[in-house]
Length: 314
Figure 1 (cartoon, one colour):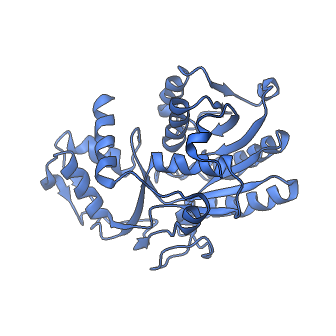
Figure 2 (cartoon, rainbow, N blue to C red):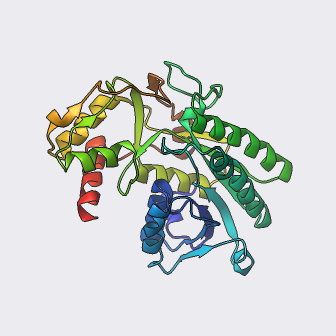
């Protein structure tokens, strides 16, 4: 197996979509800060213009380039993988059906064709909300039974992409992510929502927070992608998660504690959870551990401190 240390010494090239998103941006930054790997970000249109500043930040790296369908022909270097981070619906406010179809299925099929063109591995980003509701730690063999628009479109994409890649003889791997947190998150997700309200001394309406989730720092997630990208794979689906359940309430209180905010601003139980309201969503990461020796390294306290510091620097 090729270790992370050896991967950092490589000068191979990859194509990535979703480079302006939270996970994609952190993944690309991690690569460019630690290696000479060439990263091409494939973009066709801007779904969320508020995130375009991230692409501007990435352009400072010499081994980074933005491409589109017209400039694909100009890539002379071999491409070893096409990695899809692009998605629509992660933000609960994103409900437009045409965008759900385009952002999660149509665009991904375009990327499969690009992987075929370069004889590259296709790595798709999947979500834990494709799985059925269960009190057990979720294995990759669990049935898909989503309970939200986003989960339904992502589950559909997973099935379609797997079969299309099989038909086109493209090496397909899906990494199924659980709760990912870390620096540079924006929009209406939980952490930016907490930070901006707490630091303006505003009361925050929350659910009761008894739901249990599985949180992994985005840099640990980036390492998982690199290991899967540069090594052969025995399976087509891997859970990327900590396998540790944390109540959302405890996660929020830890954020408040680490960042020395006022806990009295938290109004637990003031609102209902309207979707993805499974009581417990915790993954089983045995496959990643057994095959790649991967496991999360960033502690929750350390990770949340990084988050707080990143907001202070913005």
